[in-house]
Amino acid sequence: MLDYRNAQRGVVLFDLFQTLVPDRPQAARDEVSRQMGRALGVDADAFAVLFRGTMRERMRGELGNLDETIRTLAHRLGGEPTSAQVRFAEVTRLRFTREVLWPSAATLSVLDALRARGHRLGLVSNCSAETVTLWPGQPMAPRFTAAGFSCELGVTKPDPVIFLKVCGDLGVAPQDCLYVGDGDSGELAAAVALGMRAVRTTEFADTDPTWTGATVGSLAELPGWRFE
Image (tube, rainbow, N blue to C red; front, top):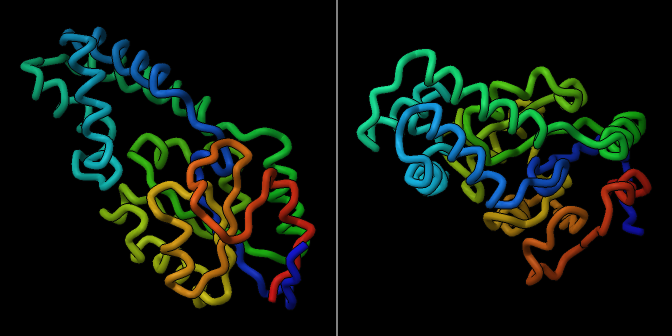
């Protein structure tokens, strides 16, 4: 067990996907995109390829909100969907994302245990517009004091801006934070470069097997730690 002192002052920053909630296989994501494409009246397979291929654009918020994103992508394929078609595609995507975002009781228990020990929690997530839309209405949201979403900030991890924005909202220096993530997008090294301690979680994905720092197999291990 790592020994962290001054537990009342410790801040824990979390990644979202593959850390707090498991993501879905690409095949499942592509099927949702095909359903959206059919609703929009464009080639379903082409829409799925385009949606997947614009992930970085969407995560940086370059295509606007979900409605605007759907319209833009449909237009790229020569489509001219009606408002009703766009809304149907939007609901399809939101329904899927809501299921992905819904946490297990075990994850909520970990967050509650950390908060009970006096830790404030922050979220640092690479995500697209639908996550931001749904976040306030799902059960993890009130457990976090601050959240930084890439699509709102225009940058994705490992850019330090997203980490520093959350630290600023919490009123803490990076050195006061423990960062927990699966390691995708170089997030662990980026957190360490800012002076944070970092822990890799492999509960939902073994994303960064080259990481040589602290690793937990389950988030349930975290509440037993103490901050330096």
